[in-house]
Amino acid sequence: MTAEIDPMSPVPRYRQLSAILRAAIEAGEYPPGSRLPSEKTLTQTHGVARETASKAMDALAADGLAVMVPGIGWHVPLESS
Image (tube, rainbow, N blue to C red):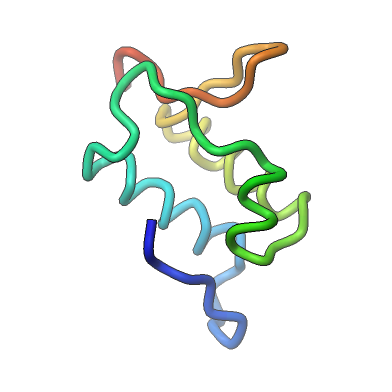
Protein backbone atom coordinates (compact mmCIF):
# COMPACT_ATOMS: atom_id res chain seq x y z
CA MET A 1 0.00 0.00 0.00
CA THR A 2 1.57 3.22 -1.12
CA ALA A 3 -1.40 5.63 -1.04
CA GLU A 4 -1.61 8.15 1.76
CA ILE A 5 -4.42 9.75 3.71
CA ASP A 6 -5.03 13.35 2.63
CA PRO A 7 -5.95 15.30 5.78
CA MET A 8 -7.19 18.22 3.64
CA SER A 9 -9.59 16.09 1.59
CA PRO A 10 -13.35 16.51 2.08
CA VAL A 11 -13.57 12.68 1.96
CA PRO A 12 -13.66 11.29 5.51
CA ARG A 13 -10.40 9.63 6.55
CA TYR A 14 -12.06 6.28 7.18
CA ARG A 15 -13.38 6.32 3.59
CA GLN A 16 -9.93 7.17 2.28
CA LEU A 17 -8.42 4.31 4.29
CA SER A 18 -11.07 1.82 3.18
CA ALA A 19 -10.42 2.88 -0.45
CA ILE A 20 -6.68 2.26 0.02
CA LEU A 21 -7.36 -1.19 1.48
CA ARG A 22 -9.97 -1.98 -1.20
CA ALA A 23 -7.43 -1.14 -3.92
CA ALA A 24 -4.83 -3.37 -2.25
CA ILE A 25 -7.33 -6.25 -2.01
CA GLU A 26 -8.42 -5.82 -5.63
CA ALA A 27 -4.77 -5.64 -6.76
CA GLY A 28 -4.10 -9.00 -5.08
CA GLU A 29 -1.84 -7.65 -2.34
CA TYR A 30 -4.23 -9.39 0.04
CA PRO A 31 -5.54 -12.53 -1.66
CA PRO A 32 -8.64 -14.40 -0.43
CA GLY A 33 -8.02 -15.91 2.99
CA SER A 34 -5.14 -13.61 3.85
CA ARG A 35 -4.95 -11.54 7.00
CA LEU A 36 -5.42 -7.79 6.72
CA PRO A 37 -3.38 -5.32 8.79
CA SER A 38 -4.54 -4.88 12.36
CA GLU A 39 -6.21 -1.65 13.40
CA LYS A 40 -3.09 -0.84 15.44
CA THR A 41 -0.91 -1.32 12.36
CA LEU A 42 -3.22 0.87 10.29
CA THR A 43 -3.06 3.64 12.91
CA GLN A 44 0.73 3.55 12.87
CA THR A 45 1.09 3.22 9.09
CA HIS A 46 -1.49 5.81 8.05
CA GLY A 47 -1.48 8.17 11.05
CA VAL A 48 -5.17 7.78 11.80
CA ALA A 49 -7.06 7.23 15.03
CA ARG A 50 -8.02 3.71 16.05
CA GLU A 51 -11.72 4.57 15.60
CA THR A 52 -10.95 5.66 12.03
CA ALA A 53 -9.22 2.36 11.31
CA SER A 54 -12.14 0.48 12.87
CA LYS A 55 -14.69 2.36 10.75
CA ALA A 56 -12.62 1.66 7.62
CA MET A 57 -12.63 -2.07 8.38
CA ASP A 58 -16.37 -1.97 9.10
CA ALA A 59 -16.90 -0.31 5.69
CA LEU A 60 -14.92 -3.08 4.00
CA ALA A 61 -16.93 -5.70 5.88
CA ALA A 62 -20.19 -4.05 4.77
CA ASP A 63 -18.98 -4.40 1.18
CA GLY A 64 -18.04 -8.07 1.70
CA LEU A 65 -14.30 -7.42 1.38
CA ALA A 66 -13.31 -8.17 4.99
CA VAL A 67 -14.44 -10.49 7.73
CA MET A 68 -13.50 -10.44 11.41
CA VAL A 69 -12.29 -13.76 12.77
CA PRO A 70 -12.68 -13.48 16.56
CA GLY A 71 -9.37 -13.75 18.37
CA ILE A 72 -7.41 -13.67 15.11
CA GLY A 73 -8.22 -10.45 13.25
CA TRP A 74 -9.52 -9.18 9.94
CA HIS A 75 -9.22 -11.37 6.85
CA VAL A 76 -10.17 -11.23 3.20
CA PRO A 77 -13.06 -13.68 2.78
CA LEU A 78 -12.42 -16.80 0.73
CA GLU A 79 -15.39 -15.96 -1.47
CA SER A 80 -16.33 -12.37 -2.19
CA SER A 81 -19.97 -11.44 -2.27
